[in-house]
Amino acid sequence: MFLPAGSQDQIGEKLNDQAKVNQIFRNVVRRRNYVAIETPVVEYAQTFTNPSVGMEANKLLKWFDGEGEIEVLRADWTTAIARALMTKETTQSKWFYQGSVFQKNESGIESQQAGIEIILMDVLLGEMETLFTAVDVLKELSIQDYLIELGHTGIFDYLIEPLLLNQADEEKLRSAMDEKNEDLVYRIASANGNDQIANQLVGLIQAYGGRDILADYRNKWQANPELLAIIDHLEKLITSLKELGVDDVIVDLGSVRQLRYYSGTMFSGYLKQTGDICFSGGRYDRLYNQFEKNISAVGLAFYVDVLTKIIKSDRKKRLVCIVASPETHVKAEQMRSEFPDAQVDIVYQQPTENQYDEIINLVDGVRL
Image 1 (tube, rainbow, N blue to C red):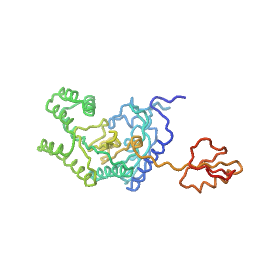
Image 2: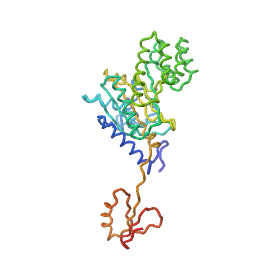
Image 3: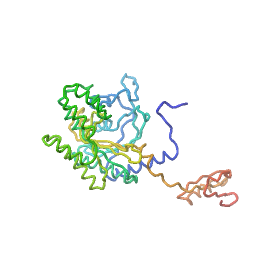
């Protein structure tokens, strides 16, 4: 049988590397006192498509259940975990997860993620812990050639507030900003009667780079306390990362996210070797508004499939073959303990190909 479009089998070394990424991630987060959480693979569509989240229904893998409700495969860990935590009374702040999410996109329908969620924690403390955990994981994976990008949704939200956009136009503008489409951003903003804001939004698309960007906009926004507070906040995060030894940190003041629940600092990690995003996340306090809760929340997800491609595979072990017979099979099995650092095959026929580092023949009592 053929597979549906976007699905694929996986075999061999790739699975070993994937397991290595997951195990190292798990070791790091458990060392940092995160607690494991897992949500069902099947959820109601409304969990992801409601106005607080805003996922597109046509990108979800969905069907009708026996009662006529639309069910979907888990499309987002953060949303599912928020739903789960609101059904439990807990004082635990730090959580971690590992597993698949399912959405129809250009890379397929299933992707592996490993991530963290922090709730009920001071804003700056939570964001620094999230970023420092990301640095810790990458260090343990022996990945050093990366950069971290910081942004903040508060800038976009503040500038568009006077436009009084309807939801459809706001989504179009958000998408245009995300795609860095300057012409479309200007047309949407100016069509709603404000050329000045349109020019500011277009300018933000180019507000990308090092600390000099923050200095430039600190000067531009010196009369605006709300925007200055965002600049100060990003400056603190950059300073903390640099003190930790992470020098490659940039800002993107025009950054937005398609998901509506982001509500503050956003961050992404890029692999310099490939340009791929290896983790992304941010603050999403407003996700909990749907539960009528005023909760601080921040987190990030590592893209395991991306990390799997770049990590160094474990050194291959020595291959040993024991040629046995039904009568000597038990003895051959007992001999495995003599080779704790090797991979051992037991066969009944002498191998014809030179694929083993050592061959032991129990019948003839020879080693090759």
